[in-house]
Structures are given as C-alpha cells and as structure tokens.
Amino acid sequence: MTEPQNRKNISNKNLLLQYAGIGAQITAGLLIFVFAGKWIDSKLKFSFPLLVWLLPFIFIVGMIIKTIKDTSNKKNG
Image (cartoon, rainbow, N blue to C red; front, side, top):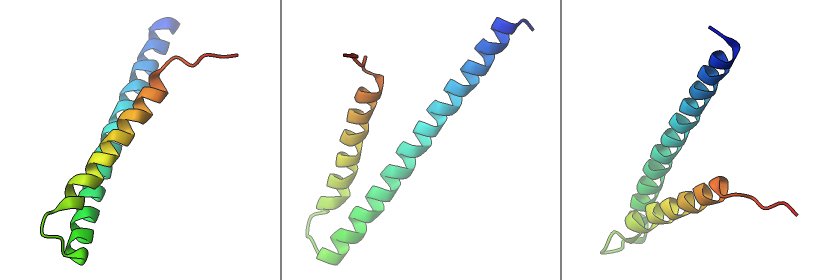
C-alpha cells in the first residue's frame, strides 16, 4: 500500500471512531437524562412527566448547538 492510501485509511478509521464516539455519547446522555427526569418527577410527584420530556430535550438542543459550533468555520482575527 502506498503512503497516501495508508494515510487515507488511517484518516477514515479515525473519523469512524470519532462518529462512533459521538453516537455513544448521545445514547448515554439521553438515557441518563431520561432516567434522571423520571426519578426527579417521581420525587416531586408531578401528575405529568414534565422532566422526562424536558431534560432530554435540553440535552438534544445542547448537542445541536455544540455540533454547530464545532463544525462552523472559525474566523481568525
């Protein structure tokens, strides 16, 4: 295998690992926020499961904002 092909394969593997890590992070975050919302709702005895919906929504909005900031072009100077 030539050097440019080898670099391209390594780059593709790193990108794949990065996306797999993001997927795991989103899954874990959603599970944590759903269960935290469920637990808090049960402690506060809400009649409607407010935090079960609100906490994951806040997490998703935060992840979208983080993704936009990470992928936007940064202007120097």
